[in-house]
Length: 397
Image 1 (cartoon, helix red, strand yellow):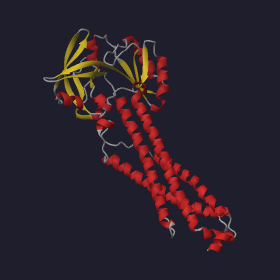
Image 2 (cartoon, rainbow, N blue to C red):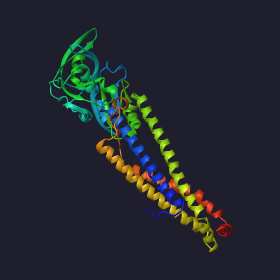
Image 3 (cartoon, helix red, strand yellow):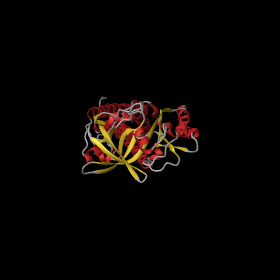
Image 4 (spheres, rainbow, N blue to C red):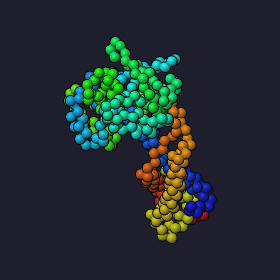
C-alpha cells in the first residue's frame, strides 16, 4: 500500500481507496448475482420445456394437445439441420387428476420420448431416480413428481399413483409408479408437472404410431434465439408454428429485463461514488500542497509536469482500490458458491440460495471501466493546478 501523506489528505486517501474498493466489489457482485439469477431462472424454465417449442397451429391449452402427424417426421429432420439447433426432441402433455384416499389434485402429465435430455430433471432430483423410458415396445409406468405434489398427496418413492385422464365424455384410469421426486423451486411448475412416458399419452389419446404432441428445440446460443426461431419457422408447413421460451413466458422475462435495468443503475451510481472519492482525495492533496506547487512553478516547473505528479499519485490510489475490490469480490463469490451462505425464500425467488455466476471478463470489464471513469474524473481537479499563482502561495507560506 503506498505511503500516505501527512495532514488531512492522509486519512482521506485511505477513505478514497476503501470507497473505490467497495464500489468495485459491489459492481462485480451485482453483475455476478444478476447473471446467476438470470441463468438459473432461464435454465429452469427451459428445463420444463425448451428454447423453442413446435406444435400444431390449432393447438389450444397445454393439456389439450393436437398431435403432429407421423408423416411430418421429415420436418423434424429439416429442423435438426438448421444452424444453431443442438437437439430436437418429442413430447406430449395432457391434463389429469391424481386421486388418493383423501385428496384429489389436478396435474399436467408431461410425456417424454426415449433419448430425451433429462439432465435438468436429474439435477433437481431429491429422491429416487428418473423414469425408465426406452425405445422398445414396452411403455414405462414410471413417473417423476415434484416435492409439492408429493407433499400434498402424501406420496413417496415406490408408491402407486392413481391418475385419471378425461377423454371426451369419459375418462381413462392409469396406475403409475412414483420412481422419483424432484424439486426445482419454480413453484408454478412444481405445482403442475408430472413427468413420464410420452407413449402413455399417445395410447390414452388413441394416436397413431409416430404421432407426438410437439417438438422441443434446444439451441446452442441463447443470444441467437430469435434468429434461430425465424429459421425454424421457415422450415415448417402452415399447420405448425414455433414459439420461443421468451414469447411463451413474457411476464417472467420482462421481470428479468427489469432486473437488468436496476443493475445498470447500480453500476452507474457506484461508478460515480468511485469518481467522487478519488476526486475529493486529489482536491485535498492539491489544496494541502498548494505552497509546494507554487515553489515548483517558481523553479520553472510547468503546469503539465505538476499535474502529472498528482495524477500519478491519484492513479496509484485508484489501482490500489481496484485491486482490493477485485480480491474482496473474488473471495465473496467463492464463499457464496462454495458454502451458499446467503439463503433465499424459494417460494418468492424460485431458488433457495443467492446464485453467483462469476466470469473473469466481468472482473476485467469492471476494473477497466472503473479505471477509465476515475481517470477522466481526475481531469477536473487537476485543471485547478494551472490556476495556482506561485507569487500568492509562496508569499502566504
